[in-house]
Structures are given as structure tokens and as C-alpha cells.
Length: 238
Image 1 (cartoon, one colour):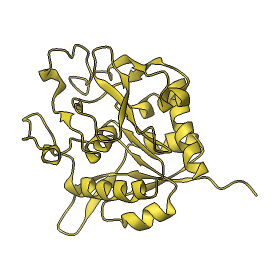
Image 2 (tube, rainbow, N blue to C red; image 1 turned 30 degrees about the horizontal axis):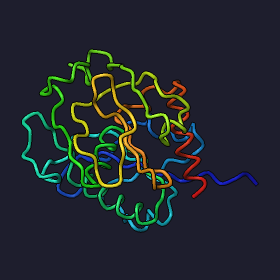
Image 3 (cartoon, helix red, strand yellow; image 1 turned 120 degrees about the vertical axis):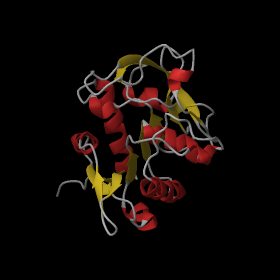
Image 4 (cartoon, one colour; image 1 turned 180 degrees about the vertical axis):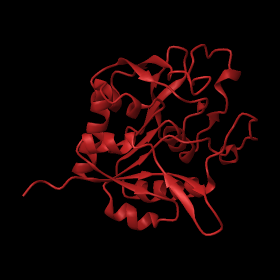
């Protein structure tokens, strides 16, 4: 009998269709990355029972998305912000509570990284182009352009560095917000060359890592394969 593959929940975007229904969606690159690394993706739409899911699933992946309402870190809304659907946010907030209580592996990507930080009490820069120090393109100007790429430098003794086996590599970037103040229990483990926070982790958690870049959009990169394989392995151990 083959070994059971870990079940990994992935939250989905949500759009209201009419007064009784909506549409859940996900860029399938996230699920393909999980499958390629040896896990089984389970898509989670809003309204699901967070406690029941956390009891049955082996890990949680929070993918990219729109912007977090800054009321959750005590700031007014920036005019460039486009808020994530409230039902999705509420579902993920409940899932984080349930998965953290069980100390099960959690991986946040882009918006998911930002959400981990806000969940732990941190704050965000709401629009990176406002900062004079930000000199790189972290988001494309139009959908006709290719996704920007830049290098990240990873803290050598971090869990992230141990997992990916590198301390510098190129990534795909697609964000206009980023971490400002770091949440409780989290440490910064990677930066871009212009100082933007690119990764965080909880060193005391079995696996709680957030990356600001989009590894799922660079599936053949060694760092991408290592990150997803490390995540799936942590879920398998659980």
C-alpha cells in the first residue's frame, strides 16, 4: 500500500453572482505546485467549517489575492487599495485561528504572507510606489507586460534558507503592498535589493512561512520546487 499523501487546504477567491450564490476561483498553479510536490490540494471556499477542516487537513496554503482592509491594523484606506472579498478574508481568519491552535503547517504567498503578518498583529505599507526607497518594479504596470523579476536575499540561518538551500535567487513579483511592522513571534527572513520585506517566518512554529513573491509562477525554479516540497513534507510529518 502506498503512503497516504497529505491533504493541503488552499483558500479561494470569491465573487458574488446573485442573492443566493457566488463563484469560487483559484489560479490552478497553486494546486499544481502542491500536487507536483506530493500533496493533495483541497480547495476551500468561504463558508466552510474552519474547525472541521483544521482537524482533518494536514496543512494550509493561503495564496495571492487583493488587499487586506487596513482597519485590521489601525489605518485608513489608501486610494490605491483594492480590498479582498470580505467573505474570503473572514474564512481565512478563522482558518488561521484553527490551524495555529493545532500548530499545523501554514504557507502564505503574496497576500497570504501579508495576511500572516496582520494576523499576528503587524502592519503593511499600503502602496509601495509611495516610498522613495522602493526603486524596483514589484508589480507590472499593465496586464500586457511580463511579470517583474528581481533577486531576493535570504537570511542564511533561517528555516526558509534551510528549505530552499539557497540564500540568493531570482523571483517573480506581483504586489503593491508589503510588510511594514512585523507581527508578534515573526522574523524577517528575506529582502529584495531595495529593502522590501520578501519573507517572514515563526522560528518556534513547525512550519509557518510567508513569501511575498509568487513561486507558483516560476514552477521550474529550484527554490520553488524546494519550497513546496518542504511544505508538503512538513504536512506529511503532521
